[in-house]
View 1 (cartoon, one colour):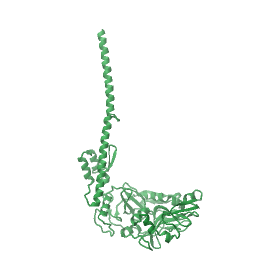
View 2 (spheres, one colour; view 1 turned 90 degrees about the horizontal axis):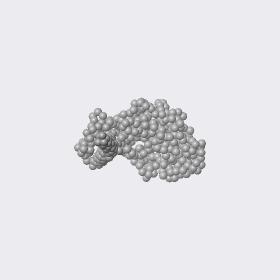
View 3 (cartoon, one colour; view 1 turned 120 degrees about the vertical axis):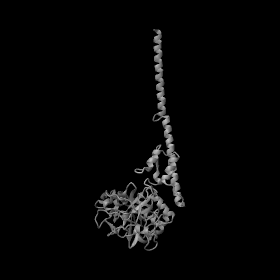
Length: 448
């Protein structure tokens, strides 16, 4: 009897020991294989290392391709880089399949939490990127100024491309923002625009497009312009213009309004020295005005903000940021733009289709400051890249201008010729009515 009891105790002890060992083994296995386990972390670290290596390899290939553009070297295609990475064991068969799928290929994959954009080597759609085509034309010193370039791998400033317009949707410029007496509406269906190459976007590295003509509002056939007036128009100009143009944002790129720097990149007015050299305002349009970069200070005046805040007087001070110049005509100094197609793209028919620049600045004369919004127009028969005052600081004088709205598309850098192909030049509609000035203070085209 005692022996059987002892055997029972031994058996129970053995069972308990086994249970404890199993528990300890379970803890050890969990430590190794759980979400935070050693083995799991090792696998993730290995994947992150592989992801980093693939990303670096793609970046290096992109840099080498950029160098090849300038040295007439050989570019490596997206397909070639994918094949190289696959052969090195850096890409799995599943990842290669995603990147090369004939029906639904992807540009971006994630390895070990690291995002890699193969679109930098060219879209999954295939073909040269527009950036590659543009860089090749620059390297070949081909501007296509006469429109006769037949190289299918070239893209130039002024070339037309087939960017697909949205066919529906609308944007509204509210009266509370523009200072105008009514809301102004723009509809995509009534603005199926042509698109031309404006150059490269310094911010994204992609190609910029500009519409062949401005958008038209629903104000009426004789008034297709956007009206901006006074303090409200000045304060909200850039936001309103960019929002209206965002109507043309698609999967290929983001849309905004054309601005002064876009024009300056084409005309070459890109430094302070150039601005001062060609600035017509001090000695021509506004006698006694200060030069670009000079300081100003006027006590007991109004800013647009203080005017709207109960017409409070403040000291209006700062640095002159406004200037204006003429292109290819008028009295010296004149900015000469020799690229005929670029000139026509920006300035042809501008006497009938003034357009806003989403760029604000401040003039200053001997007695007051003028708060201005940019525009491209004709004055006295001369093409003017000009900043006209909507609000003057001395008496709170408000003016109104009405110009066209001209969108710019900043394409993604990986967009290819197959997605947005270069096409033959098109004829642009000629506007029948010119923009100009209005509102309570008289002319707003030339600084007052």
